[in-house]
Length: 97
Image 1 (tube, helix red, strand yellow):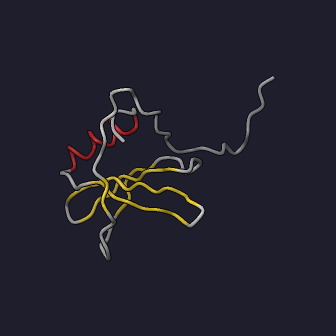
Image 2 (cartoon, rainbow, N blue to C red):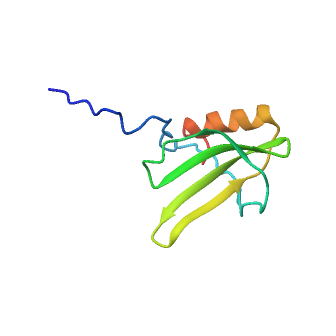
């Protein structure tokens, strides 16, 4: 018998496991005091979750890792919107990390 949880625990996207040919993204310290708009995100049920952000006309991916000492936040390089959307899709499918 299948039991359904209501409301469902996970409502957001989940990132696929890294593929064997997964490419590494460059991760940097977060920019300070920058107005950022989060436009897409992955489920935060895992220890690591991601957000696609827009700031200053460019986009980037923010990665948050939960650790015993508190969250660790890093950001990818910045790209034009079309390139950022392609990188976000690649992240979701496990092609970049």
